[in-house]
Image 1 (tube, helix red, strand yellow):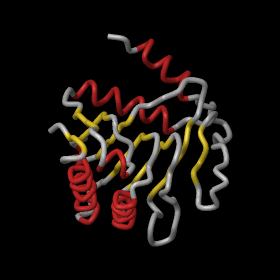
Image 2 (cartoon, one colour):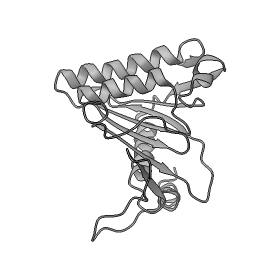
Image 3 (cartoon, rainbow, N blue to C red):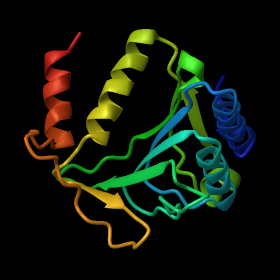
Amino acid sequence: LLMMAPLSLRNRLETLIDKEIEHAVKGSKAEILLKLNSLEDRALIRKLYDASSAGVKVRLIIRGICCAVPGQPGLSENLEAISIVDRYLEHARVYQFHNAGSPVVFLGSADWMGRNLDRRIEVAFPILDEDLKKEVDDLMEIQWKDSTKSRVINTEQNNPYRKEKKGRKAIRAQSATYAYLKKNTR
């Protein structure tokens, strides 16, 4: 279950993406949610494009470098990306795969960059406890809903701040995360 670069991480990530593609092709719900500092590995970006083209909903929260281009017709129509930079520096790497309703969630050290996947020792480990999986999912959804500090990574590469829909309260992920953790401390 442990994934380690340079030995197995790349191959296991490709396998997990392929599994989501299989689910989408069969008409099942298929989703990938990634939180990384950087996404620049061409082979994995191509895999994410393949997933998007197959109907997998791909959501990316990328703090820094993002070489994937969302919203390209026939290539990345089902791929959305945001970047959040706020007061506190964050370095979490989360890889979530819907897996036909049996979520697979990994926390790791590796950004999806050639140097991290091929030339460094990096580790990603699965979250096995269902309560912890739910907590990670809740925290990633809070991040995804940020409408204060998040920018939409777009085709034009002007990356505008995300605007909250009228009538909805603005969400600042770092504050909302603090409130969530304070409320749900075990």
